[in-house]
Image (cartoon, rainbow, N blue to C red; front, side):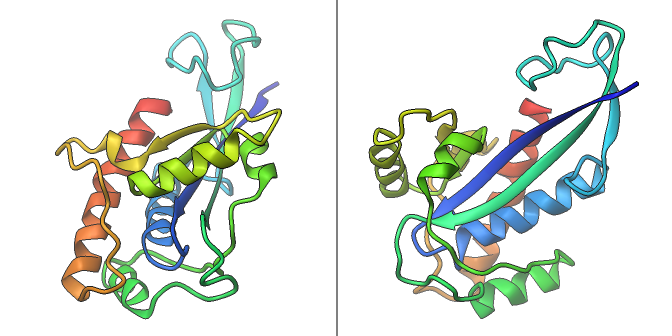
Amino acid sequence: MAEQVTKSVLFVCLGNICRSPIAEAVFRKLVADQNISDTVSTVHNLKEDNLNGFGAENCEKNSFFLLQWRIDSAATSTYELGNPPDYRGQACMKKHGVPMSHVARQVTKEDFATFDYILCMDESNLRDLNRKSNQVKNCRARIELLGSYDPQKKLIIEDPYYGNDADFETVYQQCVRCCRAFLEKVR
């Protein structure tokens, strides 16, 4: 019988209407395309797959398990709570055939205790998240810059809010590169 193992990632930016919902949508599509999303599970064999760190270490060596993802995004601020993603981000996602449906919310203390990874977009997000995580006794999340996974070494994903469509395209392309690399590293 297969055991179920769930991994989780929360993408974070300032307002949760531009960068983090793009990253969330991109990552959802990547895992769905590889049949490892929160709605589609794959069976892994511990003997054949390198899956340390997935909570499967206690499974028998020849046992099989279902890997699922919980994926979300949030804001460090309260500026945009309850708003949908920026219309330019939605247009960019539609152009690339990436479904996007989200309502902006703020990071909660529970997020630090329930998510395995919290991936943010810039140094300001990182400082805010580290400060907030210090107030959580049972913080289990690994907090990092999403850009730290970029094969092109672009550490910061710039906020396109005051920019144009080309800036949203740049964010999309960075998120695709980073999310692919992140998924390869942790799956």
